[in-house]
Picture 1 (spheres, one colour):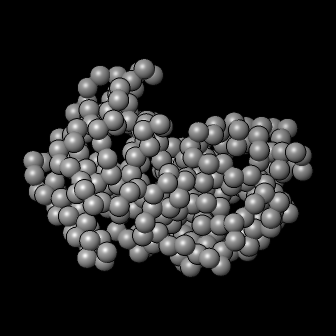
Picture 2 (picture 1 turned 90 degrees about the vertical axis):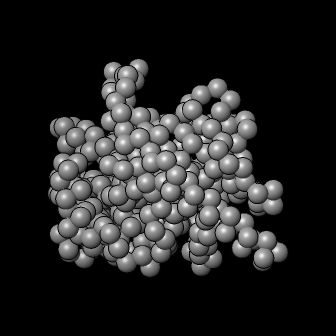
Length: 312
């Protein structure tokens, strides 16, 4: 069994190496417009399928570097195209077109260019962390109504703080890493935080006891200076929006307790993550967990306002 597993892993490694040393990808060509009028940039990309969910038109691919746009990463993608996942299985080498606008991204023209070995282990269920991600048995799941542990982090100015310092305020927390370029993941979440900041600051009659916290899970790269520059790029008001880094020993249990998964001690090419955004009440209790990226800035702003005022 061990030999078969190592053989399968060796096949994937060799396959990925072969794909990366083949014909180079298109460095990006702007063609056409999206339905919203945004310019679309296309990239010709190759990679290996790790898992797929045809019912939701989703696929996770470990892809090659896209020069000038994205380093080699492991990413979940939405597939647009009729029946493009019908003949694809985990372990297949694929070529596809990545289409990116300023605010959206998807893939199509998915083609199998090499088949997975017959012995490849089936992909994990879509709601569980992929193989290789750590399980922390001593970290209980946080549920709405639970008090959030008092984790400590470092803000974008190098100062230490803990979650208890936000007592008396409603707090929105999200998890990102600054090297994540794909529009529908960290950039979208950060953009939405910026809109939440604008909405609440513009509400003259609304509560003032609210705050936003973006916490990296890539602290080896995301230093305080990196987080500061990232915050400035997104016009984060430090009085209202903290961007934080810190020790993975505290970031990881906090993230895992609310259903986030990501790779620890992996290079960015193997970084696969999902999305979680939290609303914490002024008394430090978890109020709400927003899954994915489909929530709107207005929805989060309303949730923060209600939490700040003690309303359901």
